[in-house]
Figure (cartoon, rainbow, N blue to C red):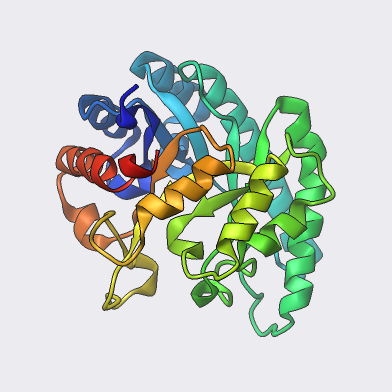
Length: 286
């Protein structure tokens, strides 16, 4: 089996491509799977998106993203939960339309602190409550809620869950087939507890998604757009991937890169570059 058989191109890596283009360039680069984002899906509607996915012959590895449910306002919290229920239904439909091996995984980014709020513990508690409230709906349609810890750099405005250990604690009381975690190299590579926490996630059957991109320095002007192509930065992908493999994860590996230079490039060229970098950086750990 080719190492590329595990590769999935997350749509964030080719952000400006519409859904039709994203599906086309992914398949054209010899990549068998795609990680979808809600905005391009919404642009054509979930039903049409499902038909397009089915026609593409690609697997669906996840849908990004749900979450952003740390608001303290009851009205905002209700809106967030309703939107997440819609996202759950979307990935259930899209995964069913995808090729065999598609994963009904909804990636959840917890969200940051509400404006003027400094109570980090309370925000984390609200995130945990929200995942618990969504679990029944997800279970009913066969979807896995995948909590993604984000680098502490983003704790204030995007993700109050900062470590893999915190993410695992958040889902600990929910069944593993319903609630898992995302292991994203960019966000967790720095954590000295990472080997133990990846092993813990594997033993609990909680690794729902593995996403890769590199940590590059110096940071560009926007910290959000600071991810690099594998091999361009500081992460030891072979060792990292071996940890994930040893933990028992055998699913697709998504390349998800937020980088303006990559976004501005031709999406077909980016897809080809992604396949090459994946084979060189991720392949040795598989």
